[in-house]
Image (cartoon, rainbow, N blue to C red; front, side, top):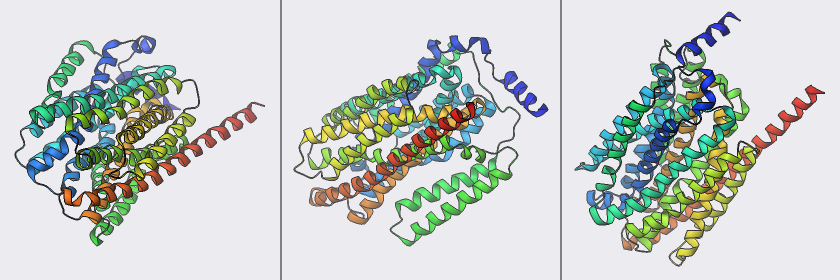
Length: 488
């Protein structure tokens, strides 16, 4: 009892939000503005690479496999650092880590734009991923903590839909800038907006959110987790070789060691006990499967349009824009609906639409018409949007407030691991089918075969995600029946 009182006192002391202001905070336009800007810019940085990548690959004359690694390194760094920064942000403050993410994204974006070799490009792209990991964790946790529970889904829906506006802008503006001014210009676009976000936060947001001040940081746990993610990602992209299989096995062993270490740690990086929360665990796993299945779609369609159809980056960007546009619209409404209806049913329905999209893409070849491709990417966009907001609301609402930053980090990590392995699947498929070949006209038939295989594997992952989401619905139903029985 005394330990609980001390914990409550600590939360009151360090969370500088007076409980009587909770309802007014949900109307704080500046908190919504900075978090929306953060998600918008992160979404832009995530997506714009797909438009610029073919031109970047041509400039540096890299193979199809190395081309994919320019994209993978970004997601690898997000996957490695999201969980650690969930703890760091809770220890030092959400706003402080928010500042750090903004500053590092400025440096990373500037570095990418002036890179003169593929090695420098990959290094600065990794720095961008590191900064986005920080921003994703702090942004979602700020929104969760500044909104009362009955409006949390709406808040998450708003900023998530804004992230997809960032994807839309990335496709439109990224294609325009790449076509007319070169790929370097697309990364300079975000810098003025990042500076603006820093200024608004400094002058207009006085609140700070600290939940575990004084707790020690688990450096050993962070190291083990980082190694496990690195082994998994690199091993997965080379799993067709012996060293890839060995690395995946090392990843499994490292995750087991990480779990054991966390159980012993006084201040764990990731409190393993929250896995016992079945709602949290199934929703997190569903998020992973959804990202694994759907993220690769942009790259399949992008490569098909630019290489097979010979469409320039500008028009390709406009076509690809339809996916995030569909996401933004469906996410906005799905977030609101998740406050009123069973969010698991919404999430499962969304994954079903994404599954249909992947089946269409599995049959795509050189004769496939543009309208059919457009229909597929719109279905994927609507489906993903229907899934992400309700599912995120489930994860963030399934744990006590003191775990807000951990829940936020879990959302980011599971999603990004799924995205990283999705690109890894694309890379390993290219490696098996195309080897070290560049994507040239004489090898376009191999590109089509590779894309078909990737779409089939992704559709299997999506089907698994539907199953996991439906298990979540069953769990929720059983829990409700149990509660009713207790009441009787």
